[in-house]
Image 1 (cartoon, rainbow, N blue to C red):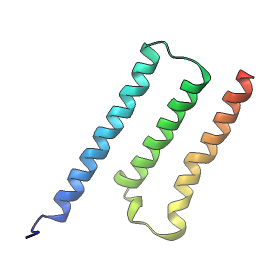
Image 2: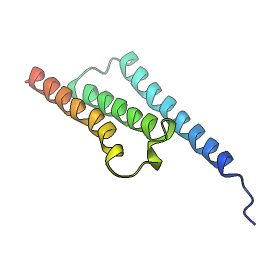
Image 3: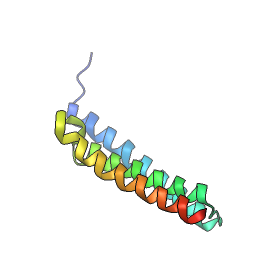
Image 4: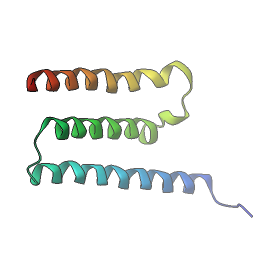
Length: 94
C-alpha cells in the first residue's frame, strides 16, 4: 500500500541532494586543507562546483520538471564557462 505523500518524497529527495552538496563542499574544503594544489585537483574542484550548480538548478529551482528548451540554458550556462575556465587552467599550467 503506497499512501506516502508526494511532497514528503520531494522533501526527502531534496534533503539527500542537500547532504550530497554538503559532502561535495567538504571534499573541496579538505582538498585545500590537505595541500592538494595541482592541476588535476583544481579541475576536480571546478567539476564539483559545476555538479553542485546543476543540482541547485535541478532540485531547488525545480528545473528537473521543465521540458524542452528551458532546461538547456542553465546547463549551458554552467558548462560553457566551466569548459573555458578548465581550458584557461590547462593552458596556464602548460
